[in-house]
Image 1 (spheres, rainbow, N blue to C red):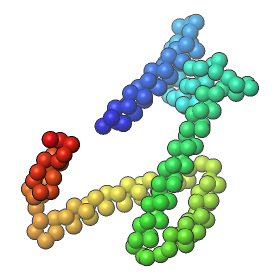
Image 2 (spheres, one colour; image 1 turned 180 degrees about the horizontal axis):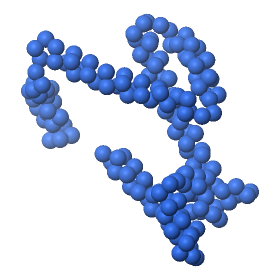
Image 3 (tube, rainbow, N blue to C red; image 1 turned 90 degrees about the horizontal axis):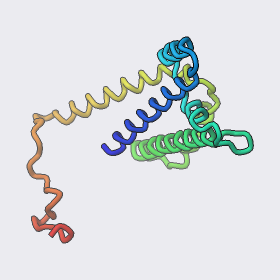
Length: 175
């Protein structure tokens, strides 16, 4: 919940910064202000463009440091997400088929290199729909399997409380 609040606040700050930047660029004539409002409805500034305009003097050797920071963090985030997916695939295939993790990683290198060579992901947009369908099917299958054999949706009552130890006593830190 905390991360959701932080993400919402950050997105609002970026949207407000974009509005200020567009209005600042259109400062001067009413015609430009109307054009900037139309521009804001049609097109959005990218994060690097917002940083370049919000911090125009943050340069080092002629390059805007903030723009470089945005690109750096985007690359680090993408690498982290990719590594998480690779580890998930490796552990799933290793547990499911009993394969050695080294062989799975060797088999994943070629598809990952091919995906890295794609310059535009518009050709892979259909895979998003396939992923959504697979996610929905997995959720339905999980609920279906959970309700199998005359199980109910009632909350289990035999789960120990977080405030109690397994023997019913109060844990040392909470006494």
